[in-house]
Length: 502
Image (cartoon, rainbow, N blue to C red):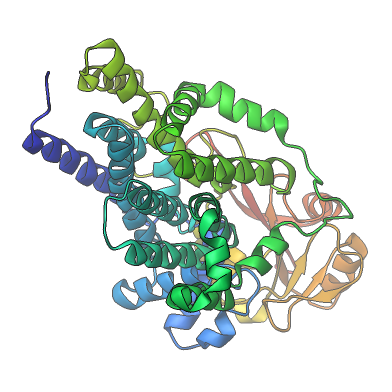
């Protein structure tokens, strides 16, 4: 029976690991423009790192309050490397690279080392993973933390360690980190809770009757529940929206994503999960429940169908893709799983479908679903605006969102205009700025100022359409930026209109 030598396995894993890191690092090296969500959390982190606001103030801000650890990670990176797009994205390059290692470790435990290498290869060079590992958003961190939790639970189930309590402590800490990174990170508790209920259900009466024996563990769980408040966060995820528990239906998009784009990965991974059930029942059930809830939330609860919300689920699919083909190899080639995994990896690489074969300065988050992320070139827009209008302190700037302007322009938004706002209201994250929603309100605010600028995102944006059309017909177009230079063919144009500049 052929067995890959240990040195060759470590060599291949090291090669995949560092090449995956290089691909990710290469994708952030040119400091290309933030998109809106990246810009906002990074601007709050910049204010925090420069001492403009305190931690207590920062974590209470809308948009930052549900991802405090992401905020603190960016702040720490800014302290080390200075505030830039590169330093905001660097932590997620690192987290994405860590995920490569744990994809290998988990798949290797569930199958063998060949399956682990195939999983690591797919995880490292997946277009989806590379796109999300090069954004200043925490989803790739949650993806990696989920794999760490699953790996630790495998060690408990297989009794690979004597330090069971230490492993449980590590799982709890990792789940807490996931929860603090983003609201969706609270779902990391699901596989652990399912695992505990199934594996230790027979001990529940003993815990209730003799709690002193389990006192340290109960204190740890209680502290985590008190600090992280996962039950409150779970309740938030399932709060009725418009009186409905399941207000949305993205089934068509889900089918397109899973079947048309990723069936070649997802179908084998499903069979890999089924194959693992007999050996790792508790872990597998936890994974199934977690995956089902994550997909269900995306399909029926999320108002936006952004693929990044499913990223941790794809991390699991990548792992079980490797598990499946290792099992196939062991069955077809007389325990030579390496042969099947090598053939599959070669076909995936040569085909180049959903795999990146050479490092790029930009990995599109819209490769699987057009318009998933509005990757406009805000950096060029505000740079051009500053050069063209030197006396910005004497000019008002109207926008729909504050996000990108908060990062790229020292001048704050003077007024926001958003769809669905009937009565003016104060902006919760920009003191002194009001939000309006109608053309009449826009005209009244415009009349108060002799000179001003209106930022128009020329797509189906948050700016009310009637205001957009008024600007196109009645205001002066100062300039238009078609799109991000790095995202050729994926243009999100922005126009700047003015009044009183003659």
